[in-house]
Length: 358
Image (cartoon, rainbow, N blue to C red):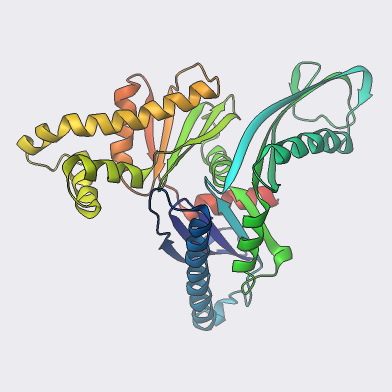
C-alpha cells in the first residue's frame, strides 16, 4: 500500500510518500517541504491562499518523484498508484478537544455500538456548531469506557445504569477541507482522502512506541503556534494551542538584538548550543531568558484556561528547529520535570495512521 501524507503546519507544508511493504514495515520513499509565507497580521484569505499554493507545489514535487521512483524500482513491484492521501493538520487548521461524556441511563440498558454512535453523534454536532463558520468533525478517538464507574476493555452488549466515555474529537473548517481535497485530486480521488489531527497521531504513535509512559505533556512548537496535549492515565485529557511558535521566538530574538531574522535564527542556535563566546552569552542571557520565559508562561496560561491544575512531571518537546532552547526553557520553569526532545518523524505518523486503519 502506498499513501501520501500531507502535514499542514502554521508556516510549513510537508508531503511524504510512504510505502507499506508486504512485510508490514513502512518506508519513507520521498519527502518534500515548502514554507508558507507569513507576516504578523496577514489576512486570513491571503494566508489560506499562500498555504494552498505551497501545498500544490508539494504535491507536484511528490508526484514528479513518484513517477521516477516507479520506473527505477519496477523490479521491486513498487505500487503503480497512490492508494490514499492522509492530511495531518496542526493549529490553526483544526480544533481538537478532549471530552468525557457521562450518561445516567436510569434503568439497566444494553450498550451497543449503535448506542455509543448515537450519543457521540450528538456531541459531534454540538462541537461543530460551536466552531466559527461551517465545520466538520474529521476525527474521533475513544480512550476509555466506564460501565457503572469501572473501566472496561470490552463493553459491547453489557447492561448498565451508568455509562462514561472519554474521547477526543477533531474539527476543521468545511471550506478548508474542500480546498485541501481539491489540492491533491490529481494524486487521489476525493473519496480516498482522510484527515487527522497532528496531536492525535503523535499520541497514537507514542503510545505504541512507549506504552509504559501514560502521563505527560506533549508540546509541538511549529511556525507561529505551539500545540499541546496533556495525557493522564493513558488518555488525552486536554488539547490546546497558544500563539508562540518557532518563528515568533526567532522574531522576538531579532527585535531584541536589533538584527534580521536570519541572523537571529543563527544566534538562537549558537546560544542554545552554548557555542557563543562567554562574554556574548552573558550579555544575551537576560534577553534569552525573558523570551524563553514568555513561551513557558503562555503554556502555563493555556493549562490554567483548561483547568489543568497539576504541573507536568513529564514533558515531550517536539519541534523541527530550536528544540534544545525550548527544552531548556521548560526545565528552568519546571525543575522537577523530566523533559525529553522528540523528533517528528514520518515513520511515527505512518505507524499511527496504520494503527487507526486496522
